[in-house]
Amino acid sequence: KSCPMIRWMKMMKSHPAVREATQLAKGISIDNETSFDPDAKMDPLVEGMNPLEGATVGNVCTRFPPEPSGYLHIGHAKAVLMNEYYARRYKGRLIVRFDDTNPSKEKEEFQSSIIEDLAMLGVKPDVVTFTSDYFKTIEGHARDLMKKGLAYMDDTPQEVMRQERMDRVDSKHRNQSHEDAIKYFDLMCSKDKEGGKWCLRAKIDMKSNNGTMRDPVLFRQNLLPHHRSGETFRAYPTYDLACPIVDSIEGVTHALRTTEYNDRDEQYQWIQSALGLRRVRIHAFARMNFINTVLSKRKLTWFVENGHVTGWDDARFPTVRGVIRRGMNLDALRAFICSQGASKNIVDMEWKKIWAENKKEIDKYAKRFMAVDKTENVELIVTNGPDDSESVFVSTDYLPKDKSFGKRLVRLSKKVLLEKIDVEGIQVGEEIVLMRWGVVKITKVEGGLEGELIPDGDFKKAGRKLSWMADVPTQIPVTLYEFDNLISKDKLEEDDKFEDFINPDTLAATEVIGDFGLKNLQKGEVIQLERRGYFRVDQPYMSTEKGLVLFMIPDGKAKSMSGLAGKLAHR
Image 1: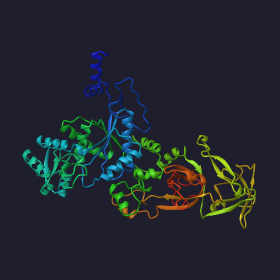
Image 2: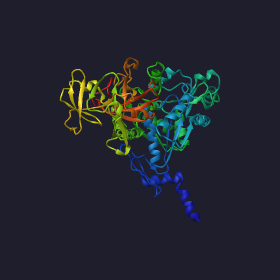
Image 3: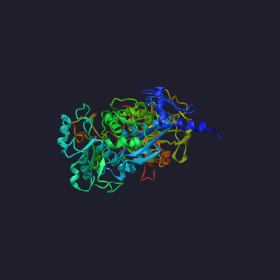
Image 4: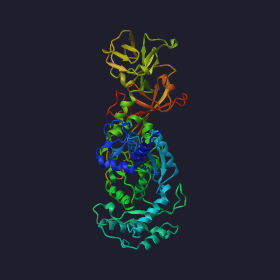
């Protein structure tokens, strides 16, 4: 049996107060981290990430607080993946908390979609919570602020209030009595529409140079039913009030917030201090913006409602499900986000950077196939090639650089199809390479292309290395889709109307004849069509009438890997 003294020491070691005192004693501050358990192991920091201030192994809790008013986009992905990274590195906990404080915007549909999006990202929270579960507690804290003279009720019209805050002018209600504040608070929380005129404001400092400290609004009436609590409540806390309260209650140790919240950090800390709540450390990071892209939920909703996209999972959309449908690899996404994690500078990034990172990953496993344009092709007769009746095949590696992926069979034939653009200017006597087969010497050009297979031809000497298809009935129909940016302007200015910069040409389809091996691909598989690029299977092959559908995946290059550039800009 263990000694009572040892058990007591272990218990004391885990006490939050003792840990905090030990942190102070050890001088753990901005760039330091430590472990109270000598056996605890931490992975080295991923390049691009900073340590959490005062973090200790086994005692870190982060949270991702999405509002259930839309689908997650690439910016949200950065936030949740960073929160997950720190929680796992420090052997801590990740909370996903729905910030459901606004019945006017929130829907059950969005709540469900966010859970699905997190699963797509491979994120498994330790617990899922809801701000709405704490409404009664938050209301109690609001009443406590009024009791302490740190909050008051105000019926100043919104525009006048905005101007007063800009001019640093006190509200006429700023010094109201506690009794009046409670009276109007109760009115606001009732079914009476008269309560809609009133809101609760924090009494902080109207002279502050930080605008967020000039008596911000903390509570408002909203008579719409809440998607979880129904009509139980008639007034709801703002994010500014709810977040610091629930963060403290739920045991969050580090609140990761984008730098756009920097001014609000002082307000966040004021609320925790005013209510005597446990302090939560703030870790700032820059939000992720991209050129030719809008991330506003309102603007993305406009694209959906006006039919510019097929839905929230459209491959042109910057939503999580959109970029994954287009072919984003999760390991690449995590690596890219971690590489940007420590930066606090907001920049408009080019999509090619993240797609270039993506290419590094998908190139490791994208099996190689071939396809030829269904209409823009030319027939080549290989005079000494096999007749159709012979059913001759050649075995070739799926991945020439990694033979562990196995082999595929390529059908050979006397008649083969080449891309029309590939044979422009071809001359008699020229030697070309039919990839995965061999060298062919062109013997005739006028009146139809003919050539002779050279058994021991020199692959290096041949000038053109071409993809091709045997002209046989077993090849399958494939539709290739390419996409372009929805916004034509790199960076929209504040006074720009995004509707004036809608790209009219963002989707193009090409019908091709594909390798027979493409027939067995499953939805979501990533492949490379040699000399065309990387593609993700959006719809598997079902029949000759319902063929294979492939979505092109950008590779981060300005030009395609060959002359087969496609119909849209290569990005």
